[in-house]
Length: 195
Image (cartoon, rainbow, N blue to C red; front, side, top):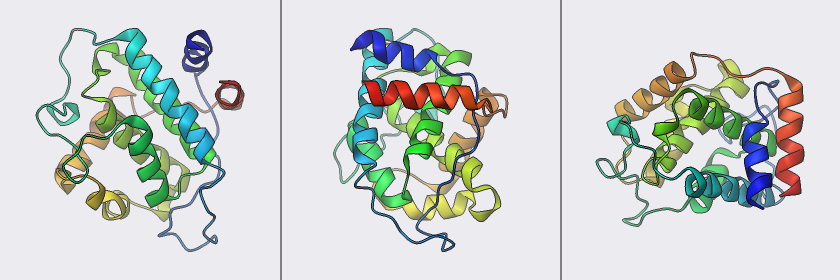
C-alpha cells in the first residue's frame, strides 16, 4: 500500500482544470457527495502515509500553518485528515476533480519545500490547497471571501486575514503555478482509484 501511495504522490507535474462547483454558485444543481467519499478516504490515506513516511522534516514553517500556534480545531477537537476533508467536501461541494487538484497542489508545494509537511501543519495546508484548487477551478465565479464564508464555522480559530495569508503563502510557494498537463491528472486519478 505504501509504495502505491508514494507512486501517487510522485505522479504529478501538471493538469487541466476539471469542472467543480461550490454550493454558493448556482449555475449547476447541487449533487450529493455520496460518490466522492471513497475518493476522500483514499486522499486521506495518501496524505496520512505521506506524513508517516516523510515524518517531520526539520525546518521552519509559516506560523499560520503551525497548529501548535493556531490550532484549527473543530468544536474544540483536533481533526484528522479524513474528517477535515469530509467537512470541507460537504461544505464546498468538492468533487473528485477538485480533490485530485488539491492533491496535485499539495504535492507541488511539498516539492518546493519538504519541511512544511509536519503532523501539525497538515490541516492548514489542506485548507490552503483546497482554497487554491477551488479558485483555480471556478475562476471568477468564486472569491476567497465566498470560500471563507462557507467554511469559517468549521474551524474554531480561522479568521479571514489569516485565511487570506495562508492562501497567498501557498501560491508564493508554488510560484503561482498550477500544473496543467492532463497526463498528470490522469495518473493521479488512476493511482488514487487503485489504492
